[in-house]
Length: 135
Image (cartoon, rainbow, N blue to C red):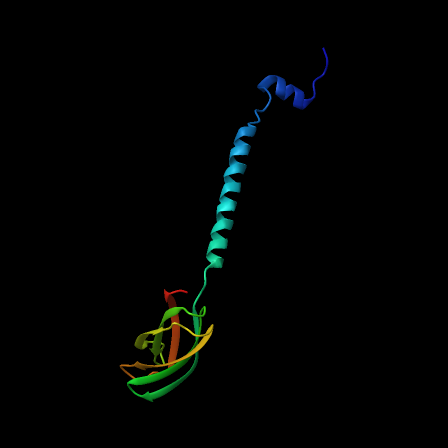
């Protein structure tokens, strides 16, 4: 009788481990499909035009009025609505106004608007820009 190595002895006693390549292929295929779906989603999201705004200047006209100038960046010919928010020293909202601009004549547009406030404002936030109409 010949001596068996430990691996041969275990294989003879308990049987060879079952390697199910089908499971490996199913898992690998599922991961590949998920990766391709994620890439397609990223291409779609990155390809969409965006509208952004950046506050450039503000002037407190009175305790109940704030004038804000901001730059709107959006594709030429689009109509965009942005939310202009006035805040006080504690960053509490004291006034808000939605401003619709467009159709824009260039990609960068300077916009000046007045926001009514319930108390003296000390800052402003311009955000929440969305397209009303795209070219």
